[in-house]
Amino acid sequence: MSSHSVHLRNVAIIAHVDHGKTTLVDQLLYQSGMFRSEQLDKLAGGQHGLIMDSNDLERERGITILSKNCAVVYHPEGVTEGGIDGHGGVRINVIDTPGHADFGGEVERVLRMADGCLLVVDAYEGPMPQTRFVLGKAIEAGLEPVVVINKCDRPDGEPERVINEVFDLLVDLGADDHALDFPIVYASAKNGWAVRDLDNMPADGKGDMRAVFEAILEHVPPATGDPDAGLQMLVTSLAYSEYVGRIGIGRVFSGTVKSG
Image (cartoon, rainbow, N blue to C red; front, top):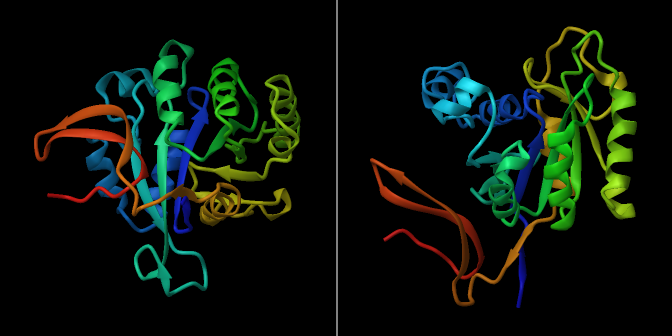
């Protein structure tokens, strides 16, 4: 029998080049308390932030080629018991997606690990061709988007126009009515703030990313699977670490994996 892991979310992030998804992930990691800013810089190879673009070619070109994965434990306000850590925490597995159609096979593999997606769009440029390709694959996979209008601090930003463009794009991609009623978060990942209402944008440019976390918890369904059944795991990529050796990255659909 399938069961819901209510304290676990699997979410993919989709965006065009330079629309800020890597910076957004850095802020989620930082504000969740998992890393200090200098630790993020170290993990990113000395480059300020940009932990998800760890490949040398990615840093050089400013794009994401290989999918990365990280996890954030978020503690909803006012919840101090239970959860994944005994203190009300919810584990959010974040899956970064390649931003180009040339890496289509990689896109399809990583989307199989997700139950929902964050669509990050520049508040001025709007959805771009690369956004269309990856978002189309997500819709085909049945993932519903949480739309993050990023760079809302831009003086030339037009978030309301961009929202209409996102809606039109989803219609063109054949999204169902539920997906078309998408939640919206307005953000400036660079400055570390996000809000659910344009009228609540911080005048002093200061705030937090709580609105992104809450939107994920509200709109991305919990992971499902029977931990007591036989192991079923889909490995989507292989990696190597000089510390632990060979690594298989994927999604467990049933059963349990334990170290040792």
